[in-house]
Length: 132
Length: 350
Image (cartoon, rainbow over all chains, first blue to last red):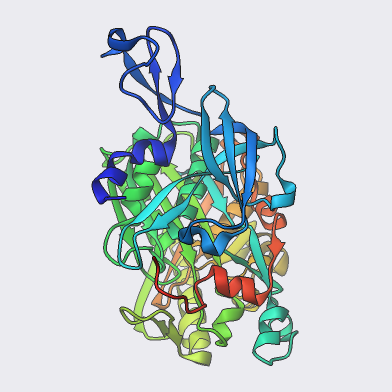
């Protein structure tokens, strides 16, 4: 990922800031600047919404053969989290063993390193989830 | 009135038994347990660093406080393991908390006392009226060279304190600091592990500065050990703070509530602050605390606090106490610890 893209996305990656359509009320995470439901009417009607970071495991998988960036953590848990406010988000589950995770497990957002651009490049921080 | 308005601690989940470290280096497995009184230490996971732990501790502090992070006007992050040599941890923290952009944020470094240097500086900003609220964090993923005596205790953890003049839970009564050029422990630029002066780190370094700062503060305040309910000292091991307290005339009972090093090791910039957080977890309104940090190189910051009735209001659900964080530990062996802490020589990243 190039530096400006990571920088541009830091608000939602660091803090789970979503957008909400003021017309239909739908909440989007990652944030969208246009609501697919309301189309052009939503332009200028999307507001930022700070998500609580709490959610439950909607489904999950255990990754045994993943990207090299996650080599030190394998096998690791990758899950789809249903957030309290509705959006579902893909994220890693940490501070839990593969045999401890289950569908419906309450989790909360935590701030972790996601990857780095080599030993001299920038560090990408962002959200993961841990048992609540 | 200026003082602490909230606090939060973070201890990573992994632990290593000091006996396991001794096993690898062919030493007496009870060495650290008997001589240093340290049973285990906290180990950060491979996706954690001083910045992620600073964020977690600060988020707990903000949740207890219930205030708006945008009201924080100054942020100091003290660490000797900032993830970047150049690029502040404090700017990442400010953004992650939602305190950005109207905030003065900067990193500090002074071995194990950078966190308390941030605490007094934030308090000074609030007291002078230059900041509404301040945040001071001590966070470290401390590294000892493999096989070095430091490896038994060099640990990971963070403690964050929000300071202000409204809703104060621990009022600052007084402060005293001492600094001298004492090369007891150092790490040169670009080197991965620190070096130290062995026994030289004790008498002319730790004890001299801790005792001088504590005595200087008590002289300023016209107080003695009998005036304090708790005494907290920087804790590179369990033996040193107990010994420093004894020499100052504090009974063991006033020192033990602030001891965390026996279970989680020396969390460096978070060490004394973690002890202070543990004491605040249980302190009653009206109780008085003496807290003294030590940073190699060398200096000490001594604080005199009185707990206020506001302490009850910040004991909220969903924010773990220091003891709860200590108890959640999961033990790993030396191989996993070495992998997590970057002590294995890896191939090039793809």
